[in-house]
Length: 191
Figure 1: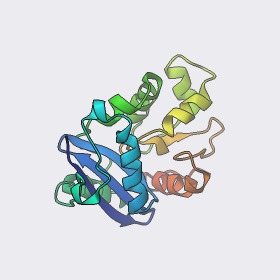
Figure 2 (figure 1 turned 45 degrees about the horizontal axis):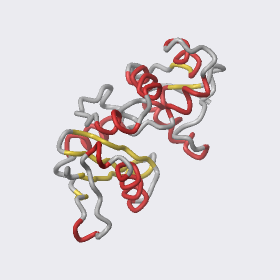
Figure 3 (figure 1 turned 45 degrees about the vertical axis):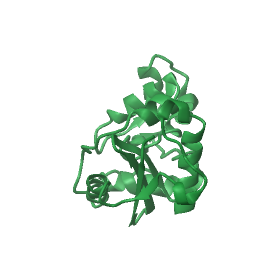
Figure 4 (figure 1 turned 180 degrees about the vertical axis):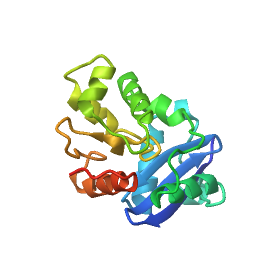
């Protein structure tokens, strides 16, 4: 069984929660409560506990979830630096367990391409669909991107609509302002 370490920080885009294991980052959540974040972790790993070796105990006294800014210091420091415009590329260990056990091959392929989009640059959903050899699969690309377990680190905010408009973010319409702000941090104005 692995331990999960949770931290959070407040920024101008709202509350940001991160979770890591001893192997690296496993989840980033934007604009949610601590309770919702923990619940999402439990849901994420409960169905795959046999693969992930992470088991959640619903008796909170025996929980293997710990709040630890110390364990997440590097991640928190880099996130804060990014959010004030001082960091252009993250250097964070990612625990592959999240990506390898919870995403389809198509979702992995899309997110691997998204991960390569450089700071201050954007691509459209259609461009990514073409790059993976599935032109016309823009909506499927958008759906795959909405499953991103580590937004900002895998920069799904850098994917916009083919007409140059901003598109969605995190599968929720009310988060478009967060996407817009992240792009502004990188020097882009997209409406």
